[in-house]
Length: 212
Image 1 (cartoon, helix red, strand yellow):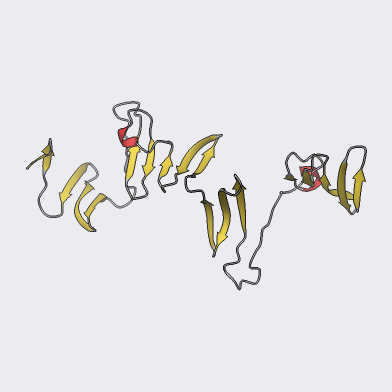
Image 2 (cartoon, rainbow, N blue to C red; image 1 turned 120 degrees about the vertical axis):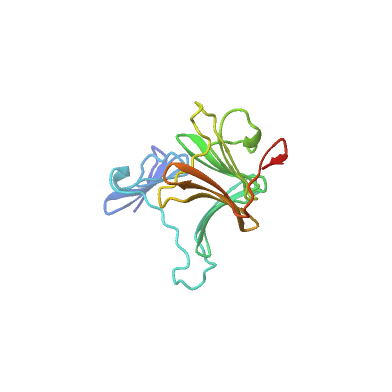
């Protein structure tokens, strides 16, 4: 049944003797919600007091055409800026289609990780120049494969990078050039660090000069 309350300027629909949907005087739509606070506001049953509130978007119900996909699209600036969230041929995607846009993830009302427009991943920072910064910290995962770690240490024994092998003792770091191992760092006898050169030669240097 559809009802209209002229005195309060809202419309509602009911089934089985209970209100199920309301359109208020501002045009906001509430489902299981008598006081919607946005254009669409969904609550669980009994005005939000019972159960989960679930939205289902389904496509390709017959499992026949894999290019039929469910997704949400977000548009602004007259469609100049778009983002989509959903499936593409069984792959779940979150894509910012704007050429200069990025994707940001956060917790506790703060941004914790960013994927910028160039494909770089920034963790714990918004800086792409951690290699040159003199304070702060974070991780830069460059789109070309480079990794930069920065940490504002609190003591001389507070490491920037900690590698912990919790399995069989041996190699901790494998160093390669064009896919070929050139050296490694390993633990030995539970107390020693072994630095190995695959080619038999190990050089140490300073000021761009090699020393044996």
